[in-house]
Image (cartoon, helix red, strand yellow):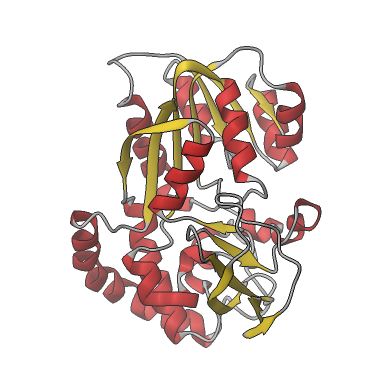
Length: 326
């Protein structure tokens, strides 16, 4: 049985990619995609706990859920902070002043790889958006679409591969992890970040949690299921964190707003839209936006202490595992 549109429905079901069992159970229903207004559910494996979006969009149909409006200016004014934190997290895994080869899987707009190249790293990237790939190639970076990267590989193995907020998006995360292993040097570092689907925020906000982002997030990982997936791909963890200020704090603010607004993620769309871009018909000046603007600052202040408590309890909304090959 699966959950969709708030109802249980029978469906042919593939086996769980982690435990190969067929014991899916309803977990969350009635999750509305803020871009298409389609309704999805999330099921959880009764054996290992892996969560999956239902209906599950395959690669042949997923592109329609990534319109230009979604890509937008997604990190906006936090881009510099985000890039700096990512850089520090990765470079802390290597000796001081080490510079090697880096592959960023799902590189977004390419800001991170451009910054790492500026710092002396030799970089490569994959990205589903062909325009971004062309832009990076024009800047002299070995960039490829996922299909090209899988088919062609890269010239030489890498010292590090980063996969930040990508594994939850892909159709076959196990195969992605196995492919990454082939791209790494024997002592290379693999750093993976996903939303933590069993964190305090996820439990509190349920279907209104900002970081569910169905159906683009096709899988929803817990610390156990992410570590299990990586272990099956022959990686061993050497470090982990459970907090990222940008994601956790804004997740708390927008999720709270989702509970009182008629439609989800209005503030996020307004903040991340390009200059002069319409975010959606009738949304830019809707009552929801007035509520969002009025409550954003108070919610930011109110949520800070719970965020710090969650961080101290290792129950944050952003899970990062740093691994090496077994």
